[in-house]
Image: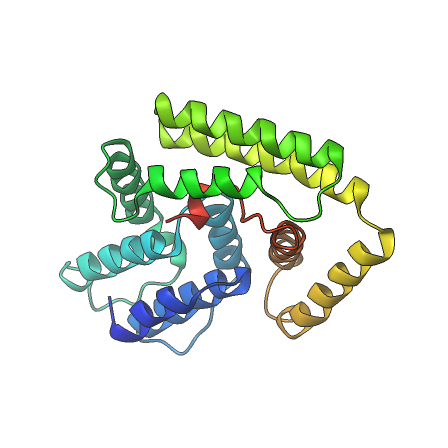
Length: 227
């Protein structure tokens, strides 16, 4: 992985950066000025929806292109990001095994403990949403005492976040939610000509969710954001 890509991983704290960093890394490693196709963008969306962390996706892309550089077909350009899909899947499997065995470079137990604390002491949540946040925190502590497979935990976190977001939206003033959505739409406008609508919609949904949660001191509920 190049130094520039490593720096991008460290700096990638927004939803858009996930897509941009993968695009820039793949294009630079491929050595071709052509940018991503709609199919490539949708593949990145699949990786994002699957909860594959940025550094894991980049590792898989690097592995695929390194293998191609030493193959008999190395004189032929890699035409699509999908060429890297198998190696990205393999990198994800290695990451999940490391999480299961406590060998990942992120201390998941500690991160989940911090998440539970944030849910136990949120800012400005009304009684229904606060009660749900507390229930999720108790569930997290149960997970901590009885570790499960990362995909099971991620699925539970995803469902819990959706339920909490519904409660937060229900208590929020419609004008406040509309303001956040308008701000995100304006920020994404420069990307709409380059990305398929499904991708920009995914980025928009993720960004609005993050901002609504952060307004109450709660981070995203996902291993993706802990790694």
